[in-house]
Image (cartoon, rainbow over all chains, first blue to last red; front, top):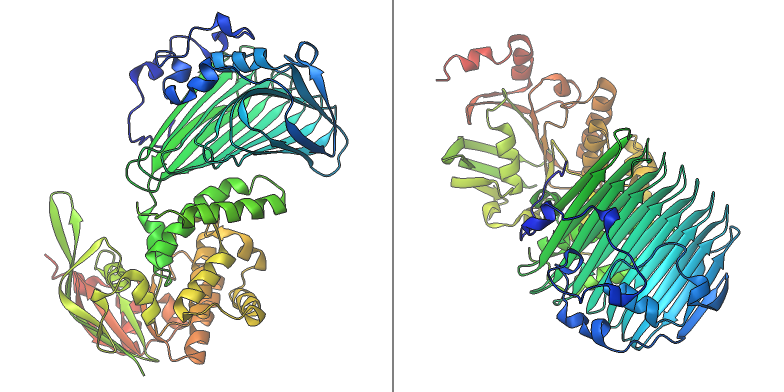
Length: 380
Length: 252
C-alpha cells in the first residue's frame, strides 16, 4: 500500500522477512539478558553502534539531575515502586538505563489547566527514568524540554488513564555533541487519547523509539515526529503501535528533512493489530525530504494484522527531493529559486508543527526550523 | 506601453525515445491593454505556448524568440520573467503543503516589487482581492491550493494576478471546469485588473464561453502548433457556430 518507496539505499533484505513478529520481541529490565549490541540484531541494524559505545559499555550516572516542573505534582520515586507501568525494555541500552537509574522522576498530571512543562538540563554520561501519568479524564499537554551536552540513555513512561486526553511534546534541542538514546513507553487506557509529538532537531545522535500500547477499548493515538538532520548527524525513530484492545485508532506521521554528507535518518514503523483488536483503524506514514547529495534516509514501514475484522490499516513511505512543480509555481510568482526551495522545505516540515496545538511553541519551532534551513544550502 | 513579442517560436518536449515538436513556428505580438484570445482544439499547443512563456523546464525552445520590450525573455529564469512583468494563471495550480496563502502572497509581492509591501495597506489589499473573487478570508490561513476545489484554485490564481499587477497575463484555460457563476467572478476579476492597469492579456481557451465575459481584441486559432487563422472578435463568434472542424480536415 506504500504510495512510493524511493529510499536512496534499499532496506536490507531481512527487514522484508522479519525473523519474529514484533510482539514476540524479548523484554526485560535486566541488561545481562540481552546480547551485546551488534549490527546483527534487527533493532540495531541501522544505528551508529560505535558512537553509542559510551552508553552501551560505560558507567551510567543514574542519579538526580537538574529539572524544573511547572504545573504538575512531581517527585523522585524509587524505580522499584515507580517503573514498569507502561512497558519494559526491549533492547540492551534501554535495560542498561533502567537498571542504572536509582529514582524515577514521577509527574502526575490532572485537571485541564495550562500546559505542564518539564525542563531538564543534563550533562555527563547518564541514565534517567521519567514517568508521566495522566489521571482519568485529564485534558492536559506536557512539554518536555531538554538541553545540555550529554550522553543520555533513558526510558520515559507515559500513562494515559481512562478518558484522559494527553498531549506530549518532546523537544530534543540538545547541544550538537549530545547523544540521546531513549525509549518512550506509552500506555493508553480505555477511551483515552494521546497525541505524542517528537521533535528532533539537534544533537549528534538521537535515537528515540516510542512503543505505544493501545490497551483500553476505544483508545487512540496520534504520533507525530519532526526531524531535521544535517552535518552528518544521525536521527532514528523506531515507532511501534500495538493495537491490543478493540475499537482503537492510531495515526502515525513522521516527517524529516536531511542535508549534508553522511547525514542519516532511520524510521522504522511497526503496527501490530492483535487478535482481540477488532474494529481498529490504523495508518502510518513517513516522509523524508533530501536536501543535498550524500544524505541517506532509511524508511521501513511494517504492518502485522492478527484479526480479520478491522476498519482500516494502511502505511506509506516516501523519500524524495523537492518537487519541481512546487518550485515552478513559486518561481512563476517572482520568488527566487533559493527562496522557493527554502519555502517548500519549510512548508514540508511545518505540516507537523501544525499538530502541536500550542501557538507559542509552533511559532518558536517555525523560527528554529527557518534558521536551520537558512544555515544550509538547499540545493537538491 | 509595453510589448510582448513571440517570433517564429519552435518548441519541443521530451517523449519516450526522443523529442516531439509541439510549436512549429508561432508569431504573435501583444501590446499593453490588448486582449488576445488563443483558441484551438485539444493538443494544438496552446498550453505549451503558455508554459514556454513562463519558462517551465519541461519545454525546450529550438528556435525563435520571446521579447518583452525588446528584452530576451528566453534568457531569463522563471522568477526573472515574473519579476519582469509576466504572469501565468495556471490550468492546474499545485498544492504546496505547509506554505500558507498569506505567507505566499506576501513573499511573491515582495519578490515582484523588490520591497516588502506596507504592513498598513497590504492586509486590506489582500482582503479586498479575496472578497472581489468571492473567496472567504479564511483561505489566507490555509496552505496554498491545498484542499481547494477546482474553482477555488482558479479564483486564487486571479487573486494573485490582482495583487501582483503584471504587465502581461497569460490565462491558461482559466475557464475550464468553472460553472457559470465562477466564470463570471473570474472574468470580472480579469476585467477589473484590465480596467485598473494597462495589463495585456493572452487568454487561452478551448471554448468561446469565456469570450462572452472577456471581450478579446484579437482571436488566434491554433491548430497543430501553428496559428491557422487570425481575426477580430467576430472569429470567435464563427467558431462558436462552426467549431474547429474546418481546421482539422487538413491535419495529416
